[in-house]
Length: 291
Image (cartoon, rainbow, N blue to C red):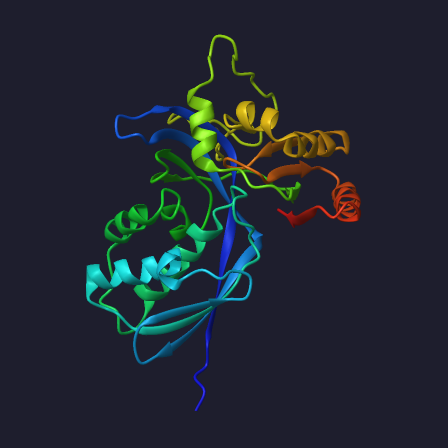
């Protein structure tokens, strides 16, 4: 008898704000960033239980299971709890890799959620599973949440927040180019801050993140990304994509993560749809989400 698969979705995320605070002694970089879910773009995990082991099949990637973050999440959870169910995962990728959208991290977090909620699992407390998630990747803990959050440290110190995007239509554009994150961090570290001062953006989406904000129910952030000053000069297609979005009527646009995706916001839904159609005619992938 064929077993019924459990179908789970692993949504992408975008960075509405990303400031690199500095480089730590251990080589990692401290961040101050605002993560926001982007549910219109998501991978799908079809999970079927079997006798033993964890196997993964993805039509789009020929990657050994042991190298996949889903497998690593399964394996690390088993090491921590002793719960090691036999699983087969059919992975359908929709979130592009190397786009700054956290697709692999979201897949891993989805697996951790599945294991932790399994009726035969002993379960882990939030702090424990959050620590395990952080060992898999800096932004994996975010995907264990259900909403936006400010992240500090290497991305694992999370403070859930509200973000006011009501009335805006988001258009996420994914140029066909890959940005290596390690390269982006190195390039940023080599920038002379005196010769390349940061420019402030005046497009505000939210209310102040400071502690004393009783008059404001939302969190404020400027659309900003520190990586842009090194990535945009090197990858003209990303720079041109952002310029195209702003010229097309977006009220704000910013690169997500270390790139290559660009998230933009339109006050006019029809204008966002028109822009998406123009991008599609140029064979540039884009996804619309209405908040």
